[in-house]
Length: 418
Image 1 (cartoon, one colour):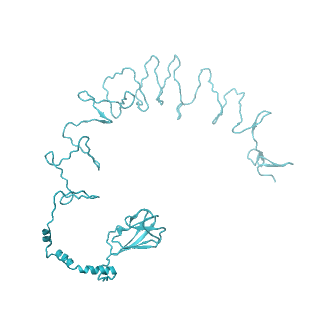
Image 2 (cartoon, one colour):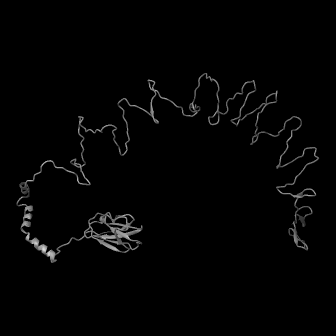
Image 3 (cartoon, rainbow, N blue to C red):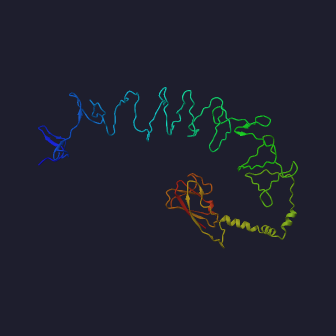
């Protein structure tokens, strides 16, 4: 049975080797046979070079007297020599010049020396803005009509000598534009403004100095929240609404009678220049010998013996007190407070308390909270400490009198007050 796998195994005395073949390769006489797979190489009797992409097989054509036809795409890896055909001195390029990729031409295009210039028919497009076109020497210059308009972004026109304009010149704002440059080439033109008498009008910084000499101007002025009034010379005069030069300025408060409330952080120095006398007769007349104030004072005067008895009982601790009635709280206030690192009020509820408030640190607290008054400072040396679950009762008349703070965030207290 024939060996029908690719590659033939050759066994020798020193080892095995494979001969590269393909089994059953199609072709005349190759059916059911092994066709050797060979590697092409070239060289003389002393060197051999394998054919690779880096060292391709060289091909030379010798002995051909006619045209060698080549079909398909030709790729070259070196230099190709191009020679002219015949003795005309030029290289012929066959085919059409109308293609998607234009043939680039550099240099000068001229007709034959002493002959007729090269004629061009059809449309001609000049795509390079730096291309210069000259007429024949000594002939009429090349005229350009129609076609593309000049653009300030890509074209530059230089004019030398005098330019005369005859006829009417009408510029249209939609199609024409004129650019004027200053003497230094910049786009800004320095200018001076003169008055009617020929003097130069002044400026201050980037603003034009303007003097308003006529009356009757109306201005809208936007002022800030704070407006200051200053006088650069002498005192600042404030005048009232009167018609005289010394009309007083009336200062009136917001109270119903126009009075102004005056407060001070320390004692005000007040001097009384006139004598003040107190008439006891008028005082007694106002009180009256039968009035309630007179009767109360008279009772105190006539019952002073009881005072010594009360003093003795207080001294020896034998004072007896009988509570006849007490005022019960009518409201119950409760709530919670998140305690922060900064001192804050327990609550902003200003309801008056009767008995006081109980404050308890939340059971979930992980640190101490401090309770105190308004002077509770942001330091650990102030305040009454409450561990988690501990409580304290404060006999105060308002929740706003109690302050709390902590050394950690996430702590809280609960309170109930009556």
